[in-house]
Length: 195
Image 1 (cartoon, rainbow, N blue to C red):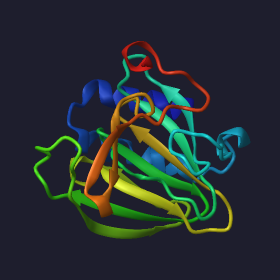
Image 2: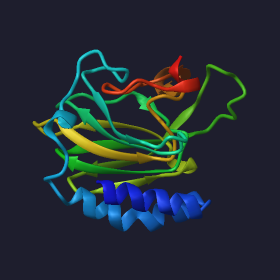
Image 3: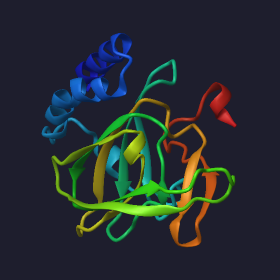
Image 4: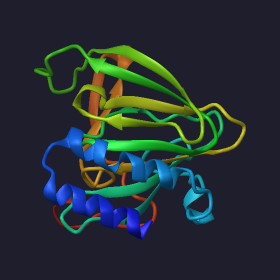
């Protein structure tokens, strides 16, 4: 993992384009996803009372001092699903264990009304271990649900400290959006993001 993070930090220090960052680090991310031995068991556990709800665990594995990178594991119990949410950053997400369905949404309103959002379902994806997807502005809103009888674990590499920034939780059936901060289970937020 340390070699992977060093590589990612080198790339993001020299490459400003999010699409090229993601394309450049993708092969190393695929390699990390394929190795079942490096992630400690404690970071593959669900947790009641988390910021995502439903026993979903968000475990921080690495955070850059500048707030421009976070690497984490997202743990979703069988039958549970995340709320519909955004990330506000470029990223790579890959499934490490279990099975998931992902629903990707597109926002169709102009965002002019603060607590209103109209979403359209853009795609549905069934994910197995080793599958990954890119997060970019056009596909930043999604939810995932565990479809296996074991807890799913996905690895998230994002171009911000996504557990500690204010993001958006969407309620598509109600055309409503609200701010939320998911937090990390094992690490406090820092500085301006601490409140």
